[in-house]
Length: 193
Ligand code: ZN
Image 1 (cartoon, helix red, strand yellow):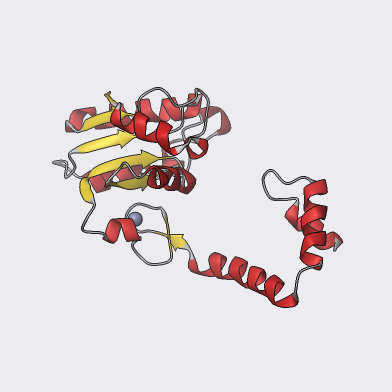
Image 2: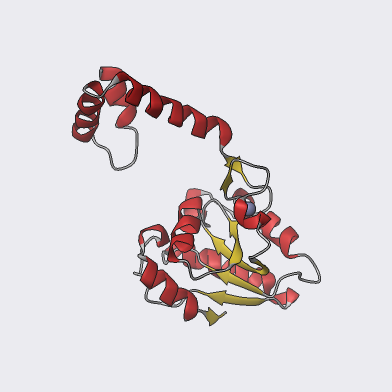
């Protein structure tokens, strides 16, 4: 029990009190439910990897979005993390594909372009560019804005149309917590960088 509480309290947003409550709840559940949960955790860890094209989460070499012929593959939306990708998918107003950076530039924390999937983004765009528009949907934080600016400068010589999500997203806010309507609005009202 102590071990489980300790492991649960490592999760974001879960303090020791919540962890104890969860542990007691699990203790009172039927054995098969607990086994199902444990198996789901292991299966996720073993099967989910990164899509070789967009670096989103996928249990196959290429994710469903990259595989889909119904999506516009020359419209690429750049996000910081897989949770942002999911938030935009939930908003159902984007029919292009994604590129997941796995972070944002944060020089003070020692995170530079080489720590992100930045080279991969350039390689994907190609020269001459194979894409019609790059939508930068990094968070409205200092790091997110710096990352957007960096990408816009990097792509300028290539002549790729680069846009940024419209304001309306809460400043300093994380994309993944924005509701669908706000995200849809931010996508429609995107402006060129
Ligand atoms: Zn993909």
